[in-house]
Structures are given as C-alpha cells and as structure tokens.
Image (cartoon, rainbow, N blue to C red; front, side, top):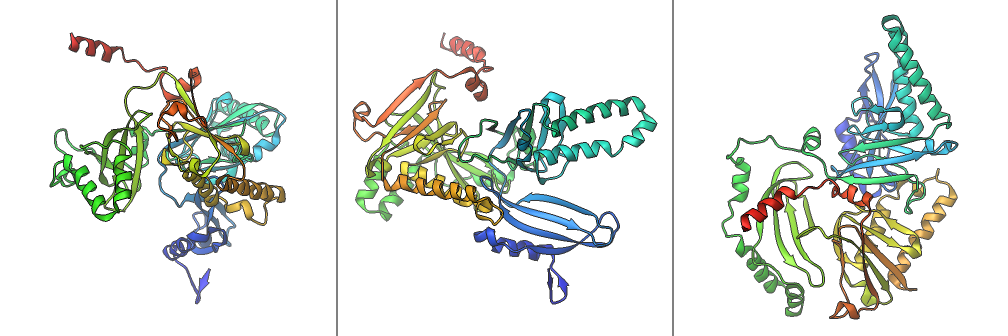
Length: 488
C-alpha cells in the first residue's frame, strides 16, 4: 500500500498489523515492495493478520511479480511457540473425496506422512502454507514430476519407479484409495480442520506431546550447553537468593496478611495445608529462550493427593506460567469424575484439570480431548468461562462473508447454550475423565461420600491409553532392585 508515493517497509506493516490485534477480523491488508527471486525485479507482497477458528493467529503472505508473473504464498505464525508439539492423524476413506478439502495449516517445522505409501514430506521440502489435504499432495506430486524428464535421461529405472509412485499419489486424489494423512509438528503450530468442532471428528485424532531436547534445539529454543560442573553466569545470578528457600513462603504469607482482610487471608492460607519449603530450579523461558527460574513446592490437597505447584517468571520478556503436577506414584487405575451441577454453589467448586484429562458436557455434546486447554486450577464456572473465551478467540472466519449460513447458526446456537450453563437455566453434567487420575473436583460436604452430586469412578486403563502415556514400555526393575538392596 502506497503512502505519499512510497511503499511501506515490512517493519511498519508488522507494527500496523499488531495494532489491529484486538480486532483481527477487520485487520487491513498491507502491501510491501519486495524482490522477485525469479527475474530480479521488484514485486508486491501482501500481508494479512487473521485468526483461524479453533487454532490461533497467523500472518498470510502472498507475493506477485507484475514483470514475470511469478506467484507464491506463505503462512507464518504471529503467536508464541506452543508448550507442546502436536500430531494430527486424519483417516481418508475411499469414496469420500470431500475429506480432501479439509484445510491444513503446515508450519515450517512440520512433517507430513502417508504410511500406506511409505511417503514422507520433510519440513524443508515445503514451506509453511495454508492449503488443503489435496493441495499438499498436489504440491508434492508436482515437485516429483518437475524433474522427471532429466531423470529419464540419467537414470531410466529410477524415473520409471517414480512414475509408478506418482500414479499411486494420483489415485489418492481421485478418492479411489483409503489412506492416512499424518501431520507432526514439534512447534505445535500446525492444524487440520475439524468441520464438526467443537464436537470430536471420528476421522481425526489429535495428540499433544512433550518435545525432545533434539526437537527443541532444532527449533532454536535451547541455550548452548555449559561445561560440566560450571553453571552458566546467568544461573549464578538467578540462583543467588539473599534469603533461604524456607523463608519464601513465610514472607509471602506475611505480605498477604498485610494486604488483605482477615477473612480472605484465613480462607486463602488455611484452605489447604501449605509447605514451608519453596525450592527453585534453573529453566528456560518458553517465549524467548532466556535463562530463568522455576519455583515449586509440594502440598497435600484433602480428598485428593500430593501435588507439586510450579511457577515460572521471565524477567527478560515478562512471560509467566503456572502449572500443577501430580506427585507420588502413577495410580494403577484411571478416574472419571461426574458432577451434577444444580445450583450456584456448584459453580464455585474447585477444579483441578490435569493435562491428561478430557472434559465432557453431555447436554451440549461437547468433548475436549486430553491436552486441550492444558492443565488448569480453577472452578467449575472458570472452566466453562475458559472454554467460552477460547471459542471467542478463534471465531475468526466463523462470521465472515464466505461462511455458510448453517455454520453461522450452529456456532451462534452453541455459544448461547454454553452461556446458559452458567445461568443454571437447567441442570447439567460435567464429566472429567483422567487416565492418570490426576484431576480433582472439590466436594460440597466435609465427607466426600456424603456429596450425592459428585460421583467418582475408577476404571482399568486400556492398552491404548497406557501406550499413549508411555506406561507399556516403562521398566522399573533396576530401580526396584537397587531400592531393595539399599533397604537390606
């Protein structure tokens, strides 16, 4: 876009896009002058910041050269690196060509696989793009086809094998073959559309996982390792507290007493038994990668178990995060908590939703798989509000001009029904299913067995659940032997 006869530079365009972040649905289209890599002349790159429903903010970029008519597009992510990597698995049955029209956001770090053909598209083969399943396969097909004439002259056998493979790829696009489309992204910034959202899609499965040190290093979010026995200078500065760890909790308690009224302080400090010792450990900021400190302590929650509360603050960029981890051994059984919400008091019940827990509201046909929303320490009302806010943030294309009317009506009705849960127009049910039994809903009575609205069921985990949690391959025999030897 020209301004007084001059093209905007990319920094000005980025700042203008950031200024429109509060209302991305009306974000303007920005144009900057950039070099065409094909003819060397100047072309135009258009930038648009938008939100993808059920996903996050992205920057769409499209380049066009008026001299040689070169065109390309790219998608980059405006948000931060996600806490976990993601793995999408889409089943594409034969005779269902409409599945190929699913939108796909592929980041620069994503790998795409089709196991039936033993076919893999590595991250460096295709840049970040906003496309469809058909578009991803078509781009791969065009890339393999491009050099076939040269291959036939140099290596006819290899060219013939590639021709056979290209026929298999084309059969996928025709809808005649059943195949699996897998997308794995350690950065967590990729996405496959679910047209039934927020309800689950029977053909699409999503799994979130912890990045390995190698994956984190490839993404550039790990500092250089230091020599053994010599902590980094930043660690020395961060760890040199002027007060013992044991006094941290006492100082925080005195500050709370000085700033709050007696009733609030008593409710906050005496609700659960608090520890006296707060420990620290060196960590890295998940937003900027700078060295920081994570503070943690262990406490016991009544009717539940021992837990570890962790909090991280980055002095460099201001990033903050907190989470609650279950302590002790892994339970032998999973746990399903069912709460019948009838009155306002039920909305104020404390809720601990672990990262491994899924949330179900049968009245809305709403189901959140494990890993969605992460781990939360909140209330019943706060959990529903969090779901509402997440849908509000990702509504981007939902109200656009190109959206079909039935989709608009569907989302409007769902949002209305979700808000009616908090107004208690009728009773509803909250189900938290946690295979690791690390979630909790507080009872309304002193004895948990007297709370008739709260039902807790234990169940045997399936082999698939144990496999996803990594329990099938866990071997503790060496540790058990060493423990028994030490006791002896």
